[in-house]
Amino acid sequence: MFRKCHAVLSLGLVLLIIISLICFPVKALTVLNGDQLIYSFYLKDYSFSIQWKHSVEKEAWVEQFKVHNNGLSLEATKFKTFGAGVPSKSEHPAVLKDGWVHMDIERHIGDELVVRSNQMNDYQLQFGHNAYDLKPSDEAYVITVNEKPLYDIIYTHLKRIVR
Figure (cartoon, rainbow, N blue to C red):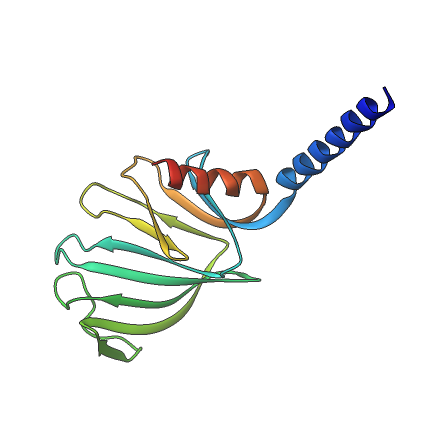
């Protein structure tokens, strides 16, 4: 009888610890679409990028962002070609490397980055070594840094595995 009671109490304690851990808030990069949480990433890497296809040039464009204590900043951009809708001059030097035009920018964005995704541009958020789709939507995606429970981050990883 004592052993059964001890086993039940031990199991209950283990479950309580697990539940407490997955509910524990951590600093996360979050992606909302309207009121819906789309992705939540644990901030071990304080950088991410947004990639899309330029609507006129039909070439990939990538902007690299950094998370700082005072918000988000655009650190650099790279694109394949100059042309319509692409600045031909900049205060930042352009470097051609591996078929891409690279520019370091360092521009403070603020607390949130708002991204509009449409069918023509194939938007993706790149975090770590993975790309996450930002599907076309009537509502903007809002990327921020928040405290989120660990289960939101686990759910993002599970969605990636299951798809």
